[in-house]
Amino acid sequence: MKNIQWLSIALLAACLQAHAQQNNMQRAQQILQWMKNAQSDSIYACFDAKMQQAVPLSQLNNMWSQMEQQLGTLVEEKEWKQDAIGGTIVYYSDLKFERAPIRFMVAFNQERKVNGLRLLPVPAEEKPQVIPFDSIHLEESPIEVVTGTYKLPGVITRPKGKNNLPIVILLQGSGPHNKDGQIGPNKIYQDMAWGLASQGVAVLRYDKRTYVYGKSASPKGKDITPEEEVIEDAISASQLAASLPFVDAQKVFIAGHSLGGLLAPLIATRCPSVKGLILLAAPSRPQDDILKEQLHYLASLNGDTDEQLLMQQYQQIKASAPEAYWDYLNKYAPVMTAHSLTIPMLFLQGERDYQVTMQDFAMWKLGMFGKPNVTFRSYPSLNHCFMEGTGKSTPMEYNHPGRVSEKVIKDIAEWAIHQNE
Image (cartoon, rainbow, N blue to C red; front, side, top):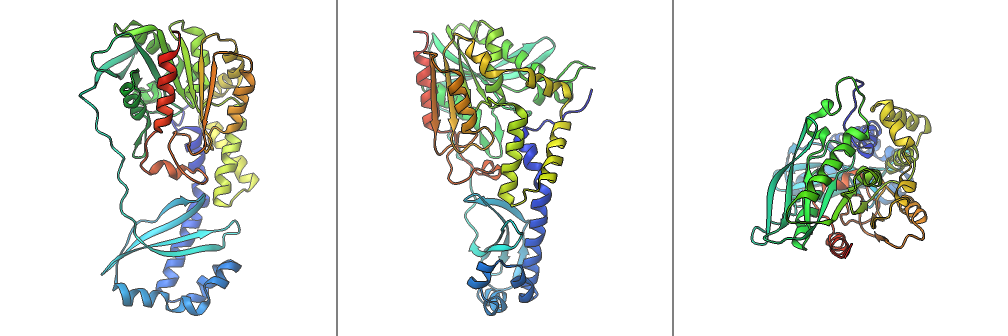
């Protein structure tokens, strides 16, 4: 079986931008070295016109010596990293001097000229925004989603002692996600499960087959497709949820995020247990269009939009999955499939999402026009993970601690509770 790299399209696209970003990071490291060696002329030559006006050569000449006079000798130069500030990629290292640490930051324009050079105090370390599990009002119990020989660990979260509950089955996006949907320090599906349960909705979440079984996620000799990655297990999970004694079988809902949202309408056509759909950041356009758009967006953040390079990156991503995988998605018409359904649907979209954009959201709206039981909600400040932010969204944003928006969780809970009444 042709190997598949178990990464989401967006994360893989971000990885393929690493070469250009690495070049800029090496430039930033060189600038710091020049500063330590008092090679001000070399630094000044790398500045764009605005920087040359803002920071004259005479100021550069004394910058390092003045820092050492104030802070003492440089003790340690920590690992170089990158981040995004207002949609601009910056490269930085935390420098530990005898008396205080300083963050050395460099940014580049599209011509690879320095358009930002800053020395700032090192900010306090960010900690995950952990909210303890409410064991007084909620309970969690292990459960197993079984499809043939595949057994996936899962967990049920629900209000303690309550019955006739609506239940939401969480379907992850592409990639080998665990039941909590952990990305960096964030656990987006755990946030959703705990939040929904606190508002009266039971939640079933489970590890994806690709997370548990890796390359063995499809039968030997068969290339993997979304059928094995998502659909088969989602049907099993929905049937299991409908059989639970504390669940209202008329309120079994799938909440699919990203790839999970794309495939949710198809799952509903094959599983009568599903009584409604919640589509979070669900793609509606052909995968090729979305992939190319993501690559261009990520390249624009780094100022490197060379079309030949972007085509090479596109081909690398296409080669990372079997042809059967892409063929499956190309033959699937998600909007038409959703339009054929009679069950209620809720579409949710973060307006800062660069992976699945407002263009996808608009196509869902157009395709569902005239259907009375379809609801749409969009959120101006939320990203693909439905977390708050400002400015352009970037892959580095997911490395900062955050939580799924309470407004999103409230909207889902209210919708689920009042459906099929």
